[in-house]
Image 1 (tube, rainbow, N blue to C red):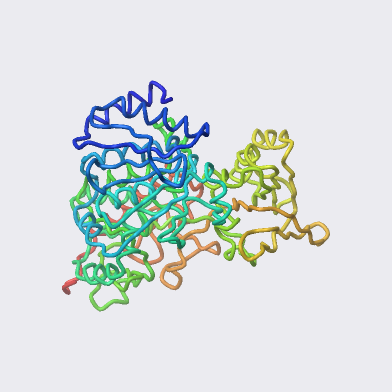
Image 2: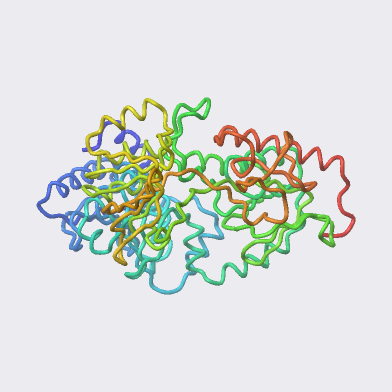
Amino acid sequence: MLDAALKSQLKTYLVRITLPVELIASVDASDSAKELIEVLADIAGMSDKISLRSDGIDARKPSFEIRRSGTDIAVQFAGIPLGHEFTSLVLALLQVGGHPPKAEQALIEQIQQLDGEYQFETYFSLSCHNCPDVVQALNLMSVLNPRIRHVAIDGALYQAEVEQRQVMAVPMVYLNGEVFASGRMSLEEIVAKLDTGAAAREASQLSGKPAFDVLVVGGGPAGSAAAIYAARKGIRTGVVAERFGGQVLDTLSIENFISVRETEGPKLATALEQHVKDYDVEVMNLQRAEKLIPATETAHGYTEVQLANGASLKARTVIVSTGARWRQMNVPGENEYRNRGVAYCPHCDGPLFKGKRVAVIGGGNSGVEAAIDLAGIVSHVTLIEFDSKLRADEVLQRKLHSLPNVTIIVSALSTEVQGDGQRVTSLVYKDRSDDSVHSIELEGIFVQIGLLPNTEWLKGSVELSPRGEIVINDRCETSVPGVFAAGDATTVPYKQIIIAMGEGAKASLSAFDHLIRHAAPTQAA
């Protein structure tokens, strides 16, 4: 079942298994079950440490458990974890088989100390690039703590469950039968949500840190570049980020990062984080900045960044690189039905709408690409564009017009998302040419209308453009001395990963120039 390339790749990893592992399959007479047994047989045949049984009694069929022989340590998959989940399968085999996890020791101990009983269920899609992070995190937690159990469920294979639970977006995580979270989450985020006392402990610890020479706010491409360039100068450098990787984590295919022919956003984000950690940089993840206080307004003479958990960090210079997020329609019903029909990632959530009717909001490249992608999965796509014409590249438009199950509506203003209390049922829009109001019956809405800078927390502190972007000059200087900015949150044109990295490097060099020209505050930080 596994092709030669996958077998070769897998075999190089399985030699790291040190403890005997059982694959326990629960199967029926379906084609999917036969396929699963073939995959598991291939895996078991690659290592004398792995055995296969097909006498599992789990209610979900096909499914299988990866169990450390003679113990309760196990992870479970309901489905065949190939595609984006192949890495999750490999890691589960290694971790159950005794290979040590790549996680901070303090985090491992925090997981082991979690009290209570936790039964997690994660619905994933094989095409979802956000799902593996969640699946792998919960799998690891179930290996480290016997009170934690986890089953990863292929939503496309278990459509009845998806319909019953009204899962409209992946990854979707249930804890003890109740919705726990949706969307990408890191191991640190999941643990922080379970360990309710962690935020207060962390706030106290952060506030006690001495002042940084350079404090980077944001951990995307711009922030990573800024941190590396600062650390290479041998100065005290810190990065505070809500989620390291930023918007890149939500990007599927990247083909314009020069010297790298093709990669995926999560892979690039992982590489960025690792590169930063190769230097003497203090990374403070899962921290949201809420206020910036310029040095001229503080008693200690340092610029201060206040965080959502109550902590406060001080620095001689600050580089803001908080990036941007998906822009919302901001119409009634959008937030109410978010992840219940309103979605923002066609690659992740598209398979959940197989055979259904959907709309795509936005006629730029992202919107048209989404419509083309979805047209191969859903029964019908309606593309809604505010302008009088589509703005996507001509080659994409030609492809879109060739598809028989796509309707294009221009000069349309979306005004309301309607639903039955559980899920989306229709989209209301106004025809801008005659102000007439129309309603489209559908089950899903994919919003693809660009990005919004994450700068609300800076209002009143630094100059912002009418679009909310941080106003900078050619040296990445803001309106506040000692505060610099880089990346998609700024007025720099062309929001591209490679441009953001260059701007981050420039901002860091400008910050260093500021440091050598201005004396440090004389008061203790």
